[in-house]
Image (cartoon, rainbow, N blue to C red; front, side, top):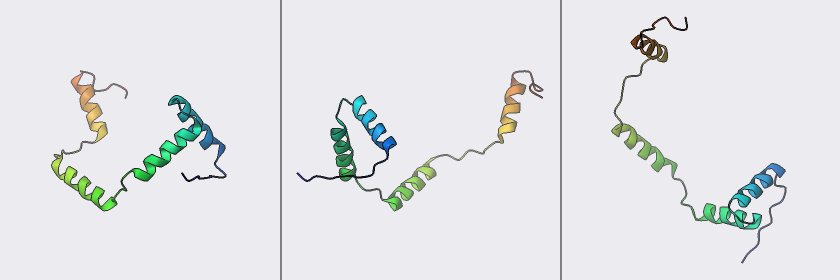
Length: 87
């Protein structure tokens, strides 16, 4: 197996990695190795395919007219019988 040496890692990053490893019951080395394996084997993100998927989902989602938030709050107060509350 090959070895990798990473220099000048910020102390805060190392601290968070150690904490993450501790929570998972692993050594720091095992945790970093697992992170590297997952990153190297994960499929690469195709932004164009992601945009096409987002557009398809958007087309399937019904459009609803948006209301102004102030009007929604006032309607809610009015329906509870106190239209002037907080004025």
